[in-house]
Image (cartoon, rainbow, N blue to C red; front, side):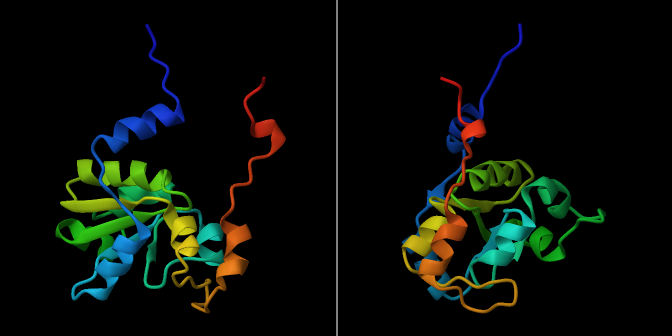
Length: 157
């Protein structure tokens, strides 16, 4: 018998193990000494348009190799963060939950997901920058971060 699980099922399962924080929690953490590492797991084009200043970028598809030594995708700063607080972010907070779950399985001691993602960070009117580290206006970022589900992607009725 084959067990069929949907994306929502995978998220619900991961949320039993992954702790989430809100944008105001992240703002407070960033203001403290020894701020967390912010890991953005969105796709390269998404990251280039608008991301949280100081975050590092590792697309979700490369995450496992980036978190470990001896791979061409290894990100030393990330591998060294196994005992450091890591806040994983994506657009809306779903991919980051799955990424944080995998990182916990890989031995990261203090990894959390940003609930509401970069979109919520922007709604909370916190700073975003583009690929050249130039500020991105809150209003300009809003359409870049909006969900864009096309009609053919909707469940048939």
